[in-house]
Length: 204
Image (tube, rainbow, N blue to C red):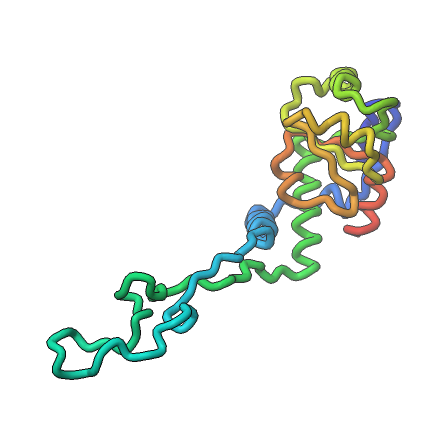
């Protein structure tokens, strides 16, 4: 199978094993869920009665005062006391085998090809960091109204980053750092030929 390059019109061959895989919805869902879960901080923390400073002495004697018995002023029932079920730092990462991850990425890329949401270019290069140049480049490729665009490049250039940071619908990602959430969320994925070769070598 092959795709036509946007900037040169040449035919770019795609690896069948990477871009012609069947779509596995359950695996893609698991892949996206695991990726989002791995990005959660999980740094919440509260203090229990043993973590709150003070409260070592018994407030009053056990019997004879007429008041309810109490062993510490840091009880969760008291003001300034600890929390009954205190939150603790939590790790939300989900285990996902390497073979499953790669199979899910192949499924996503293959579906992008089938839906004609994957475009290939020789390179994404602009002369200077100007947002206007990126907008004109997208319009020249016929992607002016494509919605959310993801550039997958071999190496991220500073000029391209500066030129696209004011464009909310444009995102840049290196081939070695491409993630399933960005691929699924993009309406159109523009990938450089060098990045395409790198991804094929990784997923084959």
